[in-house]
Amino acid sequence: MTRERAAGEPDDHQDIREAVRRLCDGYPGTYWREKDAVDAYPSEFVAELTQAGLLAALIPEEFGGSGLPLSAGCAILEEIQRSGGNGGACHAQMYTMGTILRHGTDEQKQTYLPAIASGDLRLQAFGVTEPTSGTDTTALRTTARRDGDRYIVNGQKVWTSRAEHSDLMLLLARTTPKEETQKKTEGLSVFLIDMREVAGKGLTIRPLPAMVNHAATEVFFDDMAIPASSLIGEEGKGFRYILSGMNAERILIAAECIGDARFFIDRATDYANERTVFNRAIGENQGIQFPIALAYAHTQAAALMVADAAHRYEAGEQPGAQANMAKMLAADASWEAAEMCIQTHGGFGFAREYDIERKWRETRLYRTAPISTNLILAFLAEHVLGLPRSY
Image (cartoon, rainbow, N blue to C red; front, side, top):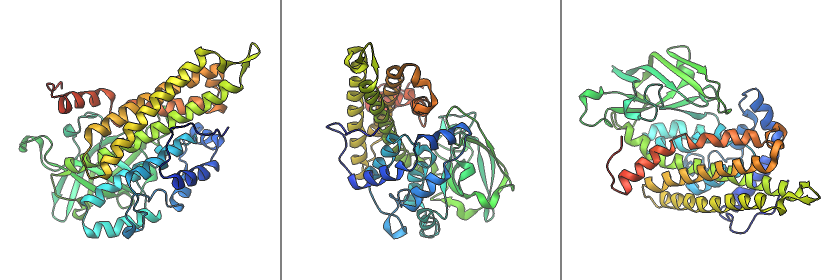
């Protein structure tokens, strides 16, 4: 049921928000349940988002996009989540393309960005995490060895979402052995891989079934040859390039969490007003209404942190602390709202037709990925508060 929005909710980018809501109206819960049941990719939804120009919102106009600020991307993803959809099917394109935009050559930008904006090419795969290194990115083992006018790539990535549904992959690999660098963050390089050219030629992609339908995969590189022109920026500077994009990633995903939280609050409020037990609406009981109100308050507070992080990013800052806090607080708020919503619905919260259990599974992911709460706390302790390094 569509509800009037409560006071204090976002009024930024209203035209974009309304366009996203209209588009999402064509993809109700039945659509997402059908995709979730068979781990299918929502190709129709992603195609319509692309045609509407929404996935190209952050690409500059000179490359065929809308040239909108990060807060517009936040509005798009938040509204997708609030509608009951799953922006995880396509959100990576909004932050991975920034690496090309900021660090790519003019030729790379002209070759790829207009095609990404039009939908002729998909950049949805981001190859960073490995089985042995996890979030210790500097310990990754995938290597790219220069061999004349090409690089030879060997290694493995895991939890690489959407690799089966993407034409391009942004890949982080080690080009200089760790023992030959002065700092462990040195010697890593970023490559833009055209997976259509190397599929079956050193590149193997295997689905990785998981609790949520994010099209997760394992990716294997066995003497995979790629052109030297695949390198983004300078060799050995890749960690810095990836790090600069992670602030945008965290802020955009935080906005998704806000959307999830508002989905749960909307559903719980509607149900509490409509559901009658013992001849009265269950929402009359403080045991029902107080958790809803508390989830709303925490969501509003987290949303302010997300907005602050986005505005700092748009102002040209490197808001690492704000981006990380936004992601953590928004993920916590969405999880609190999810738990509250299931409790409000009772047994019906576990019925698939209500979409609560699906969204509950989806929003739980963001307390762990793309960075865990513990690592965010460690970052704040060391880099903001000046406490000793804990790991």
